[in-house]
Length: 78
Image 1: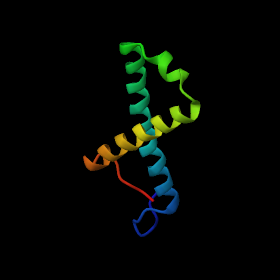
Image 2: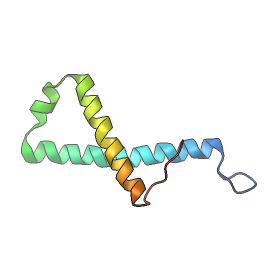
Image 3: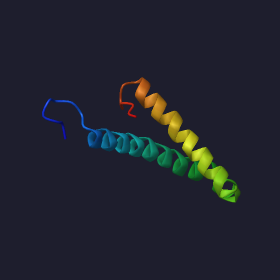
């Protein structure tokens, strides 16, 4: 919600941040699902150390978030 003076409150910023992350994460999840199905690389990725899998997914989410922000589709927050 907007505060009385029309500015975003801290809780609003947190909600926007979560929404932005959700959008980026959703895009990455869809890309991964397509990647697995199309190229049959699911076994390879699943055989990686879970920490490495997380690092890969987080990097992809960061890349998607950056590109969406550059295009003005999401706003950067704290």
